[in-house]
Amino acid sequence: MNARAEIETEIKRLKDAGLGWACVETDLREIAALTSRINKLKREKNAVICAHVYQFPEIIKGIGDFVGDSYKLAADSTKTNAEIIIFCGVNFMGETAKILNPDKRVFVPSLKAGCSLSEGITAEDVVKLKKDYPDVPVVTYINTSAEVKAESDCIVTSSNAERIMRKYYQKHKRVIFIPDKLMGTNLAKTLGKTPGKEIILWDASCIVHDRFNTETLKLYRKKYQGLLALAHAECSPDIAAGVDFLGGTGTMMKYIEATNASAYLLITECGFGELAKMRFPEKNFIAMCRLCPYMKSITLDNVLFVLENLPSEYEVSVPENTAARAKKAIEKMFELAE
Ligand code: 13P
Ligand code: SF4
Image (cartoon, rainbow, N blue to C red; front, side, top):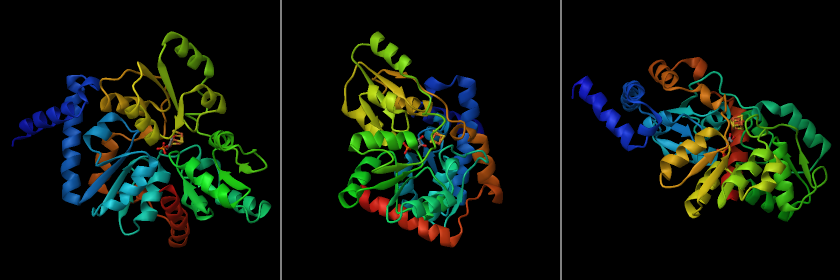
């Protein structure tokens, strides 16, 4: 096939995948040139792409081999024979993939893919907490560094935090939950636990989810009768109290699939709404959304550059001893999440 025909075929594939609505024809032509080049390189280099739901639609639909929330992508990263994983997500997700797949090369195609939660706590902070609360288990949100995970007993994600915390409370009176204070406060309410007593929290939050306001939520409720409102578990307790469903990216998507409302109000990162619209074109969505600057620092150009050059500054590495300890806590999550 000549180059022109190849691009036409790629444009059709992208349109069939649902990308047509998001881009005008010229953009789609530029996107198709990049996605077809990246997909070829993936085959040549035996690489796969993991893409978090918050990535741009052209990454998810154009080049993603595995698409999902943080839990699904961690599990999926172990299911491939590829030698290289390009992780289109944030650093802690790339680190988790590396910890679970030490023999593979893992790259995050941006040097700006941090996370306010992950940057909000250090391993030294956890060591101090463990000294202050001896014998209290440390349950840690996956949005943390490998070093923090290494100091933890169990990792959780937004889709399994409640289930795993319930299991911990069957054996313990008190649990340390770090680092998301808002998610921890929401969990405390659901589980009937008192912050500071039965659940020890840390003061970090997600800069995307911590600033939605309830006034807008009330306004939409008035305007659209029959609306179902969904919010990510990293949102404030005020938002949590006003929605029909609070959960993680994966569980929110399942909730939409299982219900039939006249419209859905989505209080989370904008990428979620874009994917929901492509997955459920017959449903109506109102996105009360914000962009994650870390997630959105990844573009098709970055991915192409990293896949072509495999530059060392983009490669994820985790010291062996840290990785071994962190892996235990992640495996505990896989065991308790089932
Ligand atoms: P999920 O576990 O829902 O993918 O969340 C990751 C995240 O960073 C949400 O802000
Ligand atoms: Fe981190 Fe929030 Fe961005 Fe998720 S949305 S990666 S928690 S800053």
